Length: 388
Ligand code: PMP
Ligand code: GLN
Image 1 (spheres, rainbow, N blue to C red):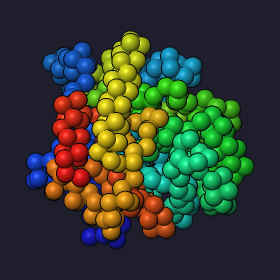
Image 2 (image 1 turned 180 degrees about the vertical axis):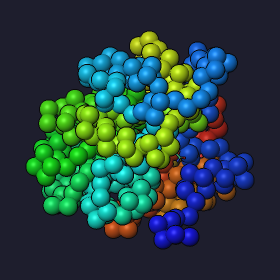
Image 3 (image 1 turned 30 degrees about the vertical axis):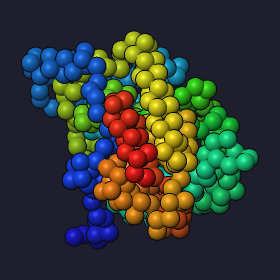
Image 4 (image 1 turned 45 degrees about the vertical axis):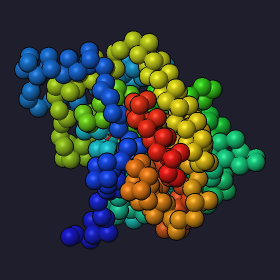
């Protein structure tokens, strides 16, 4: 093994999906819907394949998809996006994140991100030889209604070597939706230290009122320094398609594009054609998606609480974190192994989303996904109530 991969095992998602299959457990672990996206979008992909959209797409992305991304940005955020100079289509948000780091961050630079973090951030920071500076999000308490961060801790993480701040709102796995005030504070720090922002918004359409998703790139002072990353996986329940994109001002887009052209060059062309159709679905589609997930959130939240778990209500995303400290396991991994083999429910141990310094914070938590059919959520709750 090369040094850059030698410390990695299998990802926690693959590990717990395999354990779920082995034990016949209900899988609330890896975050993928157990139902498919809209028929019209699946048919658009089939049509594209039949109609001969099967050779390489343009490297920066098919023209029509870039146009649809620009229209979507205007429709939902009033953001003006030039499809030719501000967009690159990637193979999922996962590739986009890697391209942004490759394009904007040098070895030895520092990257600030919040814990718990999506696991590819940490691995990708390692790949490029940069250093991560993590700031923990803290759970709701007597003075904070939602997950929060200590402003002094964030400020202390910034320094002369900081090149990038990674934001993720709605946040996986806490479900936190960052407020305008929080984003303005973070934007102010980025301006002061001349830091760029990677804004991971893959859960942009899974938000529960009164929370509202704000696109950081539309806030004053952030527009010129922010690379927005999103993908169609969660919004259209098509996580296997891996169609993502970045939106950024031309100089930042060019930096990311230079990396993208030698990482994958281009993304699957028929799926790009279908993703353009998906993004153009009427407002009602997006409203129904959010309403469906609001109902599933209530269903699982109520069920977890009935089963005795202390569960935090997410403002967005399709994940619920629960406090598991009272069950007396040595850590979250032991708890989740017990859960999958003895209770028959798979969840994700969030300590893998922390660096060594704050790992203990994750060891008290478990993550449950509610992007599942109601029957599956109910069966998970039945097992938890019976056996936990
Ligand atoms: N960022 C976050 C926060 C995620 O949860 C995920 C999906 N698990 C991704 C990025 C990756 O998205 P994609 O499947 O489009 O690569
Ligand atoms: N993003 C999904 C999750 O957080 C899984 C992605 C993956 O399997 N790499 O569960």
